[in-house]
Length: 187
Image 1: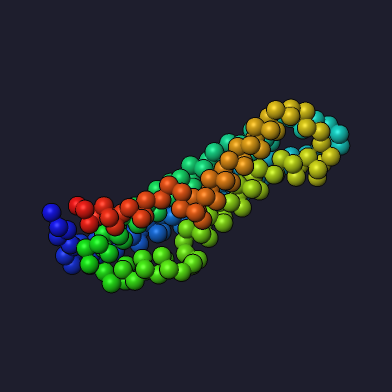
Image 2: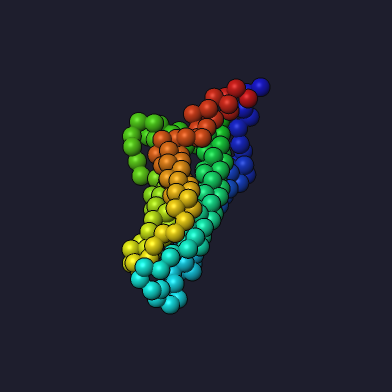
């Protein structure tokens, strides 16, 4: 069956959904920044610890939990991008939007800075800073790391986060954009 294509009401609805998804992605990125700020402020000791005292595992555990939370926000952001592309590709495949056709062609031919890349930069920065923050505390206060295994696990999780965010934001991992047009046309 060939695509029927949207009528005028459908176009308005799809446009409104696309706009809403763009806003939700921005809100998720802002939420990531907010949660990051609150948690980092929570990790900072309220009283200056004695130089040479053991650091404990709490900063590493909190850092790891923050990485997990940032991962969830980033994956939700990525899922919204997929929905956005599904809607915009439908507009392209059904010949309902010249803009979507032109924008898809532009994205294939040229490098551009759009929503995903700057949001990726923010999530990369948040993850990198979250991963190294316990080490910043260690050096700033002259503390000793007393549980190396917790340190290694926390750092490893931070590197895995950084790797996946980078690959998903800049190399199209887990992106189905190339298949969407074909899927719509095969429908």
